[in-house]
Length: 236
Picture (cartoon, rainbow, N blue to C red):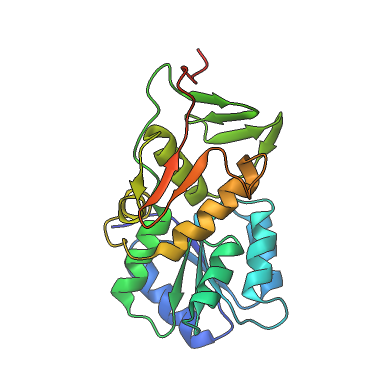
């Protein structure tokens, strides 16, 4: 059985009922709301592990809600949308979602996406190599915290998992499929738009000049490479 607390946000009562029944049967604790304002209230009042968030809701859109949630919370977020264009998918990821599911969806797919969103990178920081120090950037692998030029920078769970994997595999080309499966799980591999959005977000948060990246380098037609200096970058 699975475990975790999930908040379902959808303005359609039937969808909320179906998802509540399905998720409870899988072992999750479930609460549900119908508006963006209710989402923000629940997130402030209670702790949840994952938010299932419909894009189209009355009042605040799901994208607006996602952006607001991301200002203060690292909760895993899956967007639910009836639109299947790459532009709409990128918009959901760019707003801060970890994943998206297109309606109508089947139950096994939804449950697989939930497990992937709740999944954390299993790699642990090795003793003595828990903090990576670059020029103006400090990455603490043990506490999952990042500081840039002396200021704390908030990363989403998947942003940190992606950064963690690249930091642990520096100075070599990392193919798209390998990155996707390492961070999201074995059911992923073709969702290149995920990486494009998440890498762009990491560059904005870490790079001195995001348009001229120093650390996260694109390997054309292959993937990405994380550049560490040849000297030992670890802080004792």
